[in-house]
Image (cartoon, rainbow, N blue to C red; front, side, top):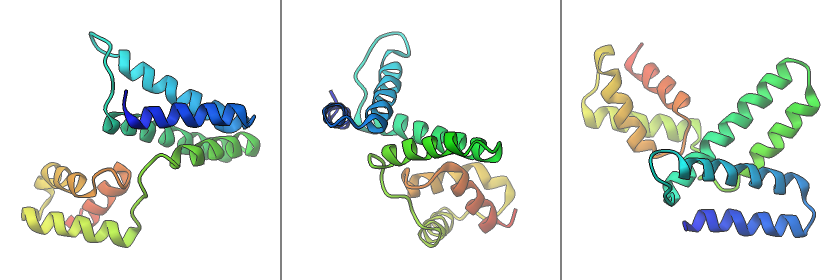
Length: 151
């Protein structure tokens, strides 16, 4: 079992004992998503820490998007719940890059690869994503790559 999954399970049990309903339900949901990812495909397998991290990142993104949708629909109570769940998941994710750090990393990746035009957007994105290494959402990275390539 991966150490991140072990940590999620231990934290969920601690939250259950402390009667922290928000953390308990959020971590149960995250562990269910990890379990679903483990049985996806032809055979059940244990996920690595990086794969568990990818599942948690996807779940956190779902929470942010849901919070935004609820807020726009005027359902502030639901939006607050989704935001709180996202904050619980953020404890397990790597720190997100600031805009300045993201700009610097993307610029370095573009210069190193010699990317200059619209036709090179795909390879430029691949290089930028590798440089960022999961510390920023793909949408932010793509917007910065487009901006620096002048698209």
